[in-house]
Image: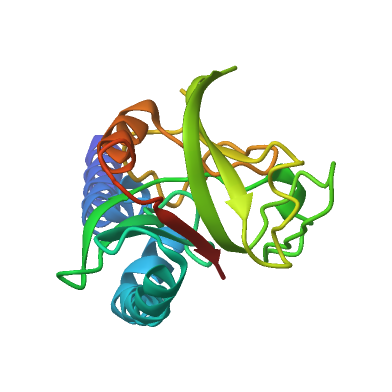
Length: 220
């Protein structure tokens, strides 16, 4: 009887050991490593996505080169914002028109009204729409606004010619992070292209030292 019990106990211990062994080597890694789907999808498509962003950027920059010459803007730099890029990634680009390259990049908000729940952004030039307006802007003089230093914006296209009346300006806010946070999103504005305070300080160096107004172009 004692031998039988001892045999059963030995078998039980061996089975428990085998189960523990299997759990450690097969199941534990599954629970220990959590993969976020959005991260995985972005990493797989990151090369293609970056090429598309660069392609759009180069296209706008080429058009901007002609526009700044014809309309008396700075021929050295322009600001380009690609609204197809997720808000948690850098999509505000300071473009060097002389060297044909990106000199600086940072995060920027879009308007709360531009999110309609479809996954794609919508844009409007209407007052109280709280939407981002696409198009070219002349960056005007700076002033002390509600959130500190801000720059007046004058819409130059039919899609954004109501920007000044809507009080759409370039300014900063603490809610905008200093670096990329994708796949997370950043805060929303009421239609203003809003950047982080440190990024605005860098933009001021371009704006305040330029003899001619700087062109801002928001596109999709």
